[in-house]
Amino acid sequence: MPNESIENIASVIAYIEAHLTEKLDLDRVAGAVHFSKYHLHRMFTRTVGLTMHDYLQRRRLTESAKLLVFSKKSILDIAMLAGYESQQAFTNAFTSMYKMPPSKYRENEKFYPLQLEFHLEGSFPMLHLKDQVPWNIEFATEEDIPRWMELVRLVVDGFPWLNEEEYIPVLKEKIRTRQALILKDGDTAVGVMLFSCETGSIDFMGSHPLYRNKGIPKALLYKVMNELLKGKEISITTYREGDKADTGQRREIKGLGFAEAELLTEYGYPTQRFVWKEDSHE
Image (cartoon, rainbow, N blue to C red; front, side, top):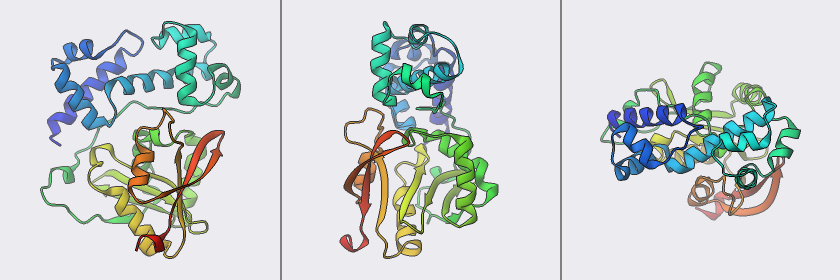
């Protein structure tokens, strides 16, 4: 992907973020950044992995969730700031994503983001190579934590209950026990995985959106499967079928060869376990 496209999308995102509480649509944004609607839609979706409409809705609902927890604004005021015509329309949209109405979310007093502002800093040298370079997947170290967290924030849509204060101590322990893998392109983390040697579960797997067609999830999975958890049943959890918060994670996990297993509830969130059995895919 050319650097110019990345820079263009960065300027589009900066414009969206500066006008989050205003009436925004593809026409207005395209006019502001001097692109045709068609070109902007295609370029944004290809780079971010979401349509601009979906990104905007998820960002507004995230900011709404923050206001519910950290402000005393009424739910109606928050609904209006998020661009909804009525409190009921806002409640319906919020509940479909957060799995609880705004009033209950406020009572819980626990904020977690649905979508953070999309940052695209970095040089990404491997993106511009014509030939595929073998991935050098390593055990993460504590020095990797800042770049690891940058990637986690970028792919937070696949991790629907992220609390960084709780996550970082877990990450440090996983690093200490060599259960955290990282793939870097220069100084940028482009793939990460937390796993459990004891249970065979993959606790977190993320790859940089710009590298979504580079086979990173498969490379991480095969590293774990063939070297670190050989012979174990490997499992991962993701969104249940039909969850509107799912931006494609469920489809990706099925595409990797995982089979549906039991329905779960994790951190109060409805999920489903998937299982990858080595002997069934040989």
